[in-house]
Image 1 (cartoon, rainbow, N blue to C red):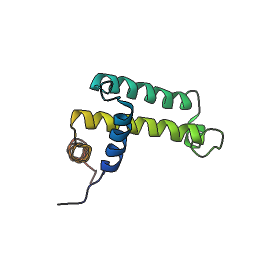
Image 2 (image 1 turned 90 degrees about the horizontal axis):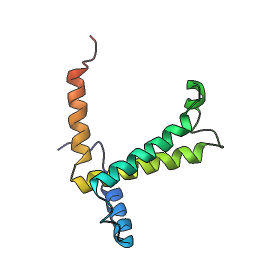
Image 3 (image 1 turned 180 degrees about the vertical axis):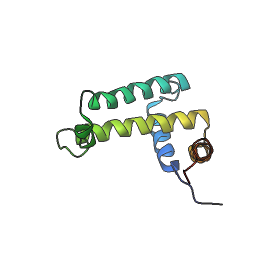
Image 4 (image 1 turned 60 degrees about the horizontal axis):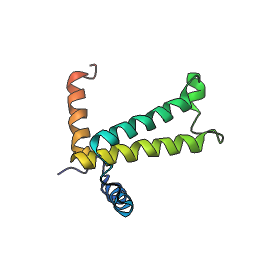
Length: 110
C-alpha cells in the first residue's frame, strides 16, 4: 500500500472530542456542516475581495491580515474534515480518485 496523500485521522479525532465535549453531535448534520463550511469559505473570500492579484498573493504574509487568513483556512479545513467524518468519506481515497480522474480528463501535454 502506498503512503497516504492526506492523513487527517488525528484532526478527525480532535474534532470528534471537541464535539463530544460540547454535546454538538446532534447539530453536526451534513446539511448544517455544509452550510457552516460555505459560510467559512465566504469569510475567507471576503478577505480577498477587491484586492489585486498582487495584493492577494501577499495577504498571508502581511502582519495585518495573516492571522485572519490562517484562521479562516483552519475553519474551512475543520468543517470539511468534520463533514467528511459525518458522511463517512475517506478524504485520502477521495483525493486519490479525483487526482486520477483529473489526470485522464486533463492529460499532460507531450
